[in-house]
Image 1 (cartoon, rainbow, N blue to C red):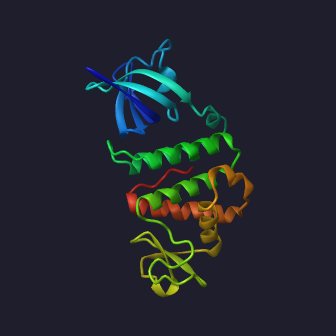
Image 2 (cartoon, helix red, strand yellow):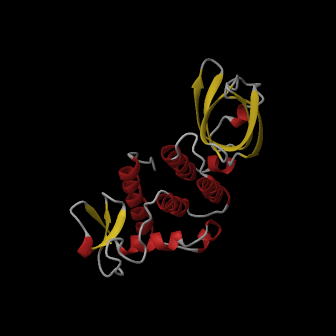
Image 3 (cartoon, rainbow, N blue to C red):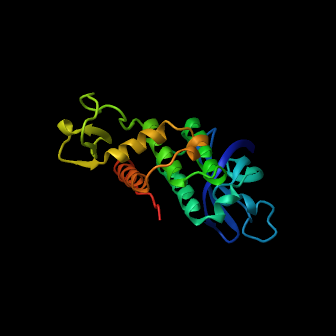
Length: 236
């Protein structure tokens, strides 16, 4: 019986048998893994603290049973539990990761991006919606659906006047290139995309955008996420 050590963050956990939990990990080494935590539903369980979403650390996993035999926690992002709005936005990030990552497929870039985003919400005092917008933009870029911020994705001309999200291809296009299945996005929403994509997570607290622009940006990105991955994120 072999044992592997992985660096991971808990995405979710579900009841499994009477005292166990079936835990979904996002690991830096192997992508998403489903593992078992034995007897962690009891009050005296040594690893009960590690079964909750957002727990980040090193997990020892016994193979082939996929049973967790030890955990060294680095952070549990406990601050998220003190603000329900931040908690839900952070949950949306984990939900997005569960949706797009293929089990067993390594994605180091997304793993690092996920930790940066969650850490920013928990500790940096930033607008949590800014973080989610930036995170979703990074997801689209990494999956080959990068949103054009300066020029039309189809003709390459700079945007003048109205611009649209092509729902079939997940691209932002100009008036001349829009098709029937497009939704108009405002200039302020488009500007929000550009500003947040170009601002690092640790600098997000230095900017201030109109609430209408951040709300529209999240709505547009959520619609785009649903079209690309057949899953709408719960942002309530």
